[in-house]
Length: 396
Image (cartoon, rainbow, N blue to C red; front, side, top):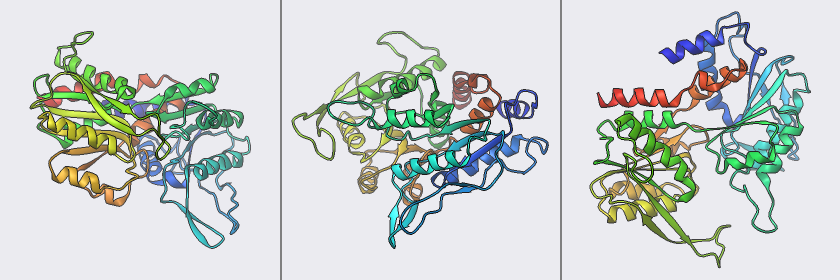
């Protein structure tokens, strides 16, 4: 309630707003955009929201040849525009020579650029909210390879974009490609723990009963945060190797002599850490693609007599379908999977009893309100305080 009141006071402060707010939502992000808009509208008054919505009407129609164009149907002159795009929404389709094609990340990124062009330089400022970062998995060069994400960021900067907001980037160091442009890599820690404690009300968040396990070295920082913040709340925070919530890590041993489906195949998962016997386990990563790695770890933890296993990935895209996770759930290997609404989720996934959705729309609305008023985001969103309050309430 206090956070909502703060947002309302900020949002209705006419003197501090940079410019009138406009939210340009591309086709793939309609569902999330409507939720964000609903939060913003609930905070605003008729004075600073005369149209009754912050959504800017737009579309990207296509010719039968596949060519497209961006159209903005509302006035945006002098507005502080926020473009929201989900490059991972493969449910969007278009016709190409009479055939139905699913939109790829490339198509979504092109539509974003078309709509920025359609603004014709009339906006006061342009920010892009791209939760799933375009090209983010191709973030570094090993040999003669493209650097898709770096080039995309530079292209947006050249088009006049001032800020990029993304969530849980695969490698946030890609921002080094645009050192003079605003780049925020946001982590929805509070939203994840809020969903976890609501959906699993009988967790015992202490060292004897709960453990955080990192799926690999790349996810270590993310998992260390969860372990540390839980420890601080319990009043048993120690430095070095004595975190109040033990942390284990899996090391992915790969076969670098072969390439399968664009990557070196995983030969084995080696576990490094304290005993997991009898403990509830929380595994987090940025993305569940095929899910093979996450399930391999879950099965290995069960061999070591772990109790319940809960997985979280910011982007739960399940490229190989849901059958393997269905089997793991029915066999008692996993007890739940949490995923955010920052990218497209199939209806089948939403209906699974083992899937719990993490809603991040209000968090994004707070972020937009703060940027629109040119203030520090931390003035509105303080994850440490909110997480501590959440855990105290949960334990009580």
